[in-house]
Length: 303
Image: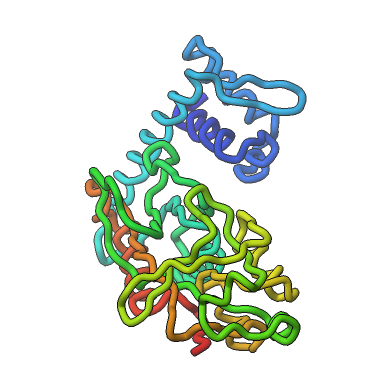
């Protein structure tokens, strides 16, 4: 068997977590997928996957070998992509990572428009609110929300700020009354995003100064979409990103509160590897996002 083909099969099995899913994707039989993995293990003399009837997991060596496969396969694809002239249509696959809410409500629709314009391109969107290592996860482009720390060999380019809105449903306001100032939040039902650094205070601004407002969190959830649904059902007040709530705000399903006390906006950057940023497929996608999100991250204006 062709070794590169077997490496590509192995990498996809690790990423998809299923022989059958990869078989359908690559239009191969499940038996052939297994033969590719077996051929690699026999060639290396080391087991790559621990397989049982219910699940499979990487061995320690398998994890290391997967990282090497991702790098080799990416280098091959980059070499082929670099051979295209700037006037040719870019092609190939990009693996793009970003937070869940940003991905679902901003990046996914923007990427759909990109793919319609450039049909030879393919995107693998990875949506996660957990910290990810671009090299380990085989990420080509990452959207980072929040302050940058150690970018090392990465290049960071800014997008529009990531703004949040404090709001509640008309039903909640009718039941509990509309708070006039943030200080009243200690007497209202508030819903918070479950996060290690999140607490019982919300950081707002007043005439350019930061203020910490105590809030009465009655429920916390590690999902912005779940918080949105809870607020729409009248459970309480939320502070969530504009991109998640824009359509509800526009239709009046949620009512914005405290316009004079906006939540602190977070910086947003596109991260790419310095030695790969000029590849046609990466450069084109990054330039598209920068132009698309130059002024706002919201697809639907609610102001």
